[in-house]
Image 1 (tube, one colour):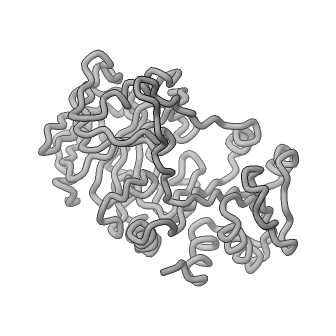
Image 2: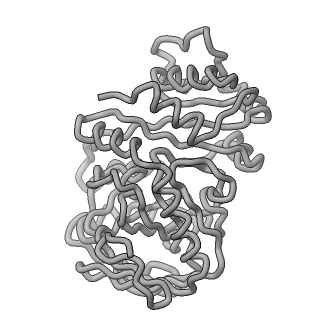
Length: 349
């Protein structure tokens, strides 16, 4: 199975809205960079392809497209209209560790040119493409084929409801009992189509299908069936129990059925507002039917709730600044807004 050119064209021109005369910076695996570049050229846009130095041993980018070197990025970001970052839903294998000496977590850091893209309000697209094991590849492809009109319509309804709401109550059969306070913060609708009125952070996530808001505070218990952090490569934490008090996780009473050591290590090595509630989201992609352990897709599952702790300054224009942003998925949750049930066990009302 592969992503057909017609579908890719729909995503580049319809979802991201690339137009003639625009300059588009493209990053990612060379095969997919070329495919995206072709579609950009078809509409009269100018693709600029950047190859990471880590891929220097591989074949060069075709001379058909303008290539950008690392030292040219600061200048290039001043002239682009859009940035497409292509991601593969593949998690690297867990590395062997010496007993008693857990491997340090390398938290992602933003470079100066990335910060400049944010400052310039350049629209961005994080594009997850079908790759990897067959089950994961097929799941991503199915998610990419979701009805964007349906997701945007549902996303707008949720946006309106969350904008009006003051209190959110989230419960699950596992025992989650969380109260969130909303204080008029912007609600982002990332449902597969670029719209400056919906993407409050100028970022479009493809395949798309999630509505997110920054809570002002959080109180109560969250039980996460399976927690993971892709770039930590440290395994899974099962039945993680987080107690929120005044918007923060009480790190003194965190519990888990297994993997608690992983959580403690990651939080210990993170900096900034690492234990503060960062976002609350509801997935609306009906074609994401199972968790594939890749958060960029998992959080979009229709009727699935997720929360996050840590940074939200760069993604949602929030106040938290941290080296950590950690999402936790809560399947089959019940969500009440000001006492009114809008979702029960993953079914929208």
